[in-house]
Length: 195
Image 1 (tube, helix red, strand yellow):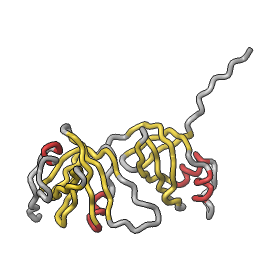
Image 2 (image 1 turned 90 degrees about the vertical axis):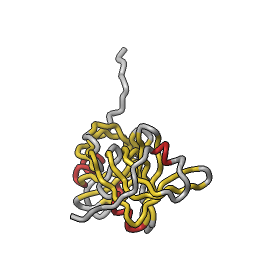
Image 3 (image 1 turned 45 degrees about the vertical axis):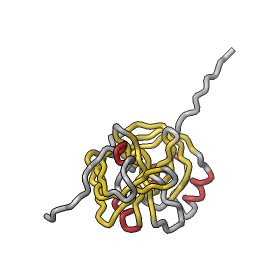
Image 4 (image 1 turned 90 degrees about the horizontal axis):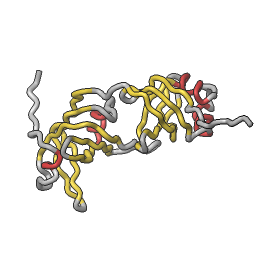
């Protein structure tokens, strides 16, 4: 096992008081992950980390983006070897060649109400969708047969097109990290009064 050198850990509030280009590490909960733009090759990706003192955006560059794979909103993570970045009176953190994202604790399985607002990929076995939960957008993986069943469409050559015709779509589901394990259409709540 190799020894990993790392910058010292600091609370987010303290990090925001440091000078530009200060080497830091931070621990917190992932509260937002910026989506990768569909059809575009992206050289950066951002996520927002929060601790008991505040929150900060972390920008990953090029190959460092892979470190975000498998991470989900709600995960508790340690992010080592970052540099502070000052821009227009805002402090954010940038990845370095030695960045590491370590998962401390995975997000819990949750029952949620969601609105499906976009389709990233719709393949035969697995699909990736954009979802709004509490007005925050996230991407999730889902079994394509389950998605097709809930949307009442077939998994065929026009699968993605058929899904796009039906969104936005309100649903209830069980999520675990970045996967939707179960999904049901949300029932419209209305009452009928017989006279």
